[in-house]
Length: 341
Image (cartoon, rainbow, N blue to C red):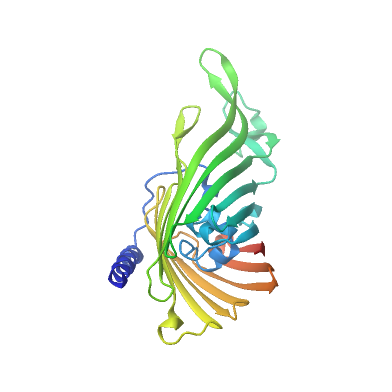
């Protein structure tokens, strides 16, 4: 069992090193509804999105659904991200873990883009000449609508292995657009899509210390289509590993240093590596950091967390900072968790 664990960890490390040493950034395709790729947990974001083998509460519905199997009783996760360009990303998850039946959960992701305005290219002879210099004409104001609603189930098959799955409806409304048709003239097209998507995941404790190996596949779906253009959802395959490295030298439940590594194969980008670490003191105070390799803008991450239990109840607070370079600045995330065992 240990030998198998060593082989799996070695494979993940090799994949990670190959990806990190690949300097070229190749965009293979473009995916739609990319808000599905954003972290739904400040803890995961602070650890460089190395979340496949680390998130084991209601927030697992946004990362690796198998982690949901470790929820006992009720667990609630609420998160908000102040994303780039004044965009807000909000997520909420509710899970209930039953000792016999497994864990059930529901999740919601919502995007807030604020108000936008249509823009059309300037066409000589048809557009108002006063717009000639700027090259475009502004139209109506509108507010895009994007959300995803999911239903999840996860179960521990044994003390070492767990699995989970989620089905969700992903909705996008990009307002209506005016299109010139050769015969019908100007027609109105509704740019609305609702697509079913599926997530799957596994989590395996290797039997040595708390080493765990994970796999997650997110956003399996059929194609969407706007007018004549087909698009895919941002399908991601993740393989991850995590472990308290301090336990190698001595077992001390009061102090842990969890190191996590994820290798990601996304549909719309070349391979990426997420590296993160979390130092916990008495399972109450958490200091986190990470780095995301092979990104155009993202890189360094950091954050803190608090977890305080009161008998069978508890509350968690997490904050994450992400560096997006000189152009976009920084991104801030806040998560609040409540649980009852």
